[in-house]
Structures are given as C-alpha cells and as structure tokens.
Image: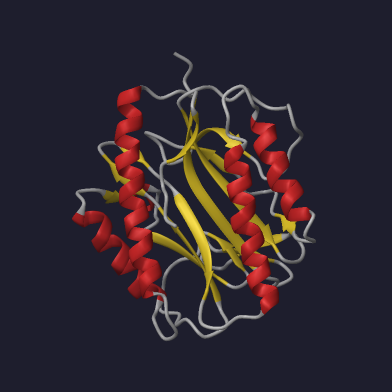
Length: 250
C-alpha cells in the first residue's frame, strides 16, 4: 500500500477525531466576543477535546503548550493564545486539532469580532469560498497541483496574496505528513491523488503583501506590511466517491 493512503479502519478513527475537533471549534466560536481573552478560548477548546477522550493535537508539537493557535488581524498562523483581549473590529483565526486513538485532525477558520467593514467581510468570504472550491478538487486521479492552482487563482483574482511559505499537508498518525499541499501550483502537476488519502487543505493568505515575519515569541507569523491575514482549513479524505470533509464545522 502506498504510504499516503489510509485503511478503512484508519479513516473511521479519523472521522471521530475530526468530529471531536469540529465540536471543540464550534464551542470556541460560540464564545468569541468582545472582551474575552485568547487564553479563555484556549481553555474552552482544551476542556471540550478532553471531554471526548482525546488530546489536543498541537500539544504534541515540541514546546507548544496550548490547544489552539489564535491569529488576530495581521497575524497569519501559529499565534499563542495569551492574555490579549478581543476588540470590536478584530478578526480572529482559530486553528485546532484533536488526537484520538493515535490519529490527528486539523482545521481552522477566521471570523470577525463584532462589527467589521464590508471590505473585511469580503476578505473573509473569499477565503471561505476558496477553501470550498479547493476541496472540490481533491478528487481521485486529480493532482495536488489542481488543488493548489484553485487556491492561487481564487485568492489572487480578488487582489489578495497567497503566503507561499506556508502550506497544507497530509495528516494522520502525524499532525504533519506528506504530501505538502501548497497554496500555489499548476493544474496537472504534483502527485496524483489516490483513494483514501487524508489532506489538511489550507488557504493561507494576506490582504496585502505575501511577505511574513516571525514574532519575538518564536511562533507567531504575521504579515510584514501589517495587512490582514486569513486562514481557512479542513481535513479531507479523498475517496472514489469524492472528497469527504472529516472536520465539518459549519
């Protein structure tokens, strides 16, 4: 069996893992409001994941001690959920994963806090729709390049930028596995998609320049020009009947 593929038994476990992570994300989203701290959101997520007999995936990453990554405004990925308080007009990305019976799931969404401008709502809407279109490309006999091209085309057509240094990836026994799923690519290129692969497909983009910088905490990656960053992600199983989202949160 080719290493990228999962067995039917493994997929069943990953469906449960994905559902646990999704339920935890839903609980976090229900509590996003003006005045709440990122640390409080992290605690909510951890309690929900552990209540299902699972472990926060991100805590298995060396030196990362939190359940979620929180990215506010110009932050793009890997933000630490500390004592920052959310304000009206912010946007916040929540990235989360669950480890259940030895298998990981991984998903993310970026949402507004209170009232935001129409321009910001458009920015978020484009990311959400792009992920949906990218998932449709995760079909057996397509290539990874088909997914990547769709992400690049849909984001850049709206005047936004793909953060090329950050990518989607395979997921399973390890939180990050091969193959990589870039946000830029050419149709028909890259490895051929097989049945029973599990991919964390990510749309990682910026309103302005795609250039990013690492924060002093050694984790948080933000846009260099301070423009808004966006992150949308789902864990998807590729089957002969079409792609199946293992982490449905909407």
